[in-house]
View 1: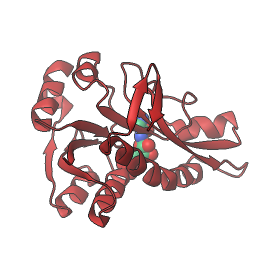
View 2 (view 1 turned 90 degrees about the vertical axis):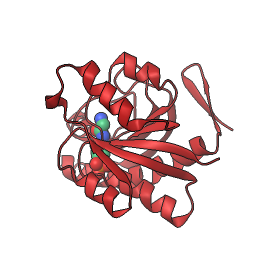
View 3 (view 1 turned 180 degrees about the horizontal axis):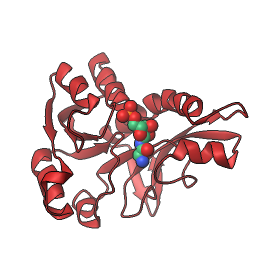
View 4 (view 1 turned 180 degrees about the vertical axis):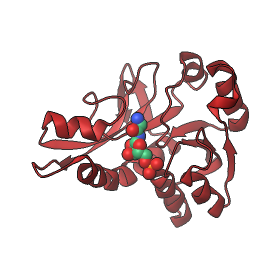
Length: 199
Ligand code: GAR
C-alpha cells in the first residue's frame, strides 16, 4: 500500500517540489496528505496548493508553548505513515520525535556529522572543507544526529561563498531526498543501532 506522509516546510519548498515532481512522474510511490508550515505565507504552501495538496499553517506565535504548537502539528498530520522535514527550521521536542520514532526523515545541507544546526553551508565555507554535500537521515532527539540514510557529495571551491555552495548542494538535495523516500516507501530501510541498512 502507498505510504502517506506529511511534509513540514518553513520556506521556499524546493525540496517539497522535488518530491511532488517525482510522485507526478510516477517514480516515487508515496502520497503527500498534507503540507504543514510554521511560517505564514511560506512559498512552499503555493507549491502544495498548485499540486492539489492540503496545507495547514501552524504559527508558533499563536500557541502558548511548544507542546500546544506540536499538538496542533500532530492533529494536522492525522494518520500519516511518516513525516518529512523539508527545510523545516524548528527544533522538535523529544516527545514529538518519540511519537514519530523512526518515521521522521530530515534533509540537512551538510555531510553529517559535520556542520549541524543552522547555516550549515556557511559553516562549511568558513571551515574550508574541500567537499560538502547533504544528508538525509532519520530524526532522533538530537539536532541532526539521527541514523543516516544517504549522503551526496559536491566539491567546495575556494571561490565559493555561502550562496554558491548552497546552490550546488541544493541540486543534490533534490536528488537525495526523493531517493531516500523511495527506499523508505519501499520498506527497504532497516535501522540497526545508529546505522541504516539498505535492503
Ligand atoms: C534546504 O537546503 C534544506 O537542506 C535546509 O533548508 C533548505 C530548505 O530549502 N534545511 C536545513 O537547514 C535544516 N536544518 P527548500 O525550502 O527550498 O527545500
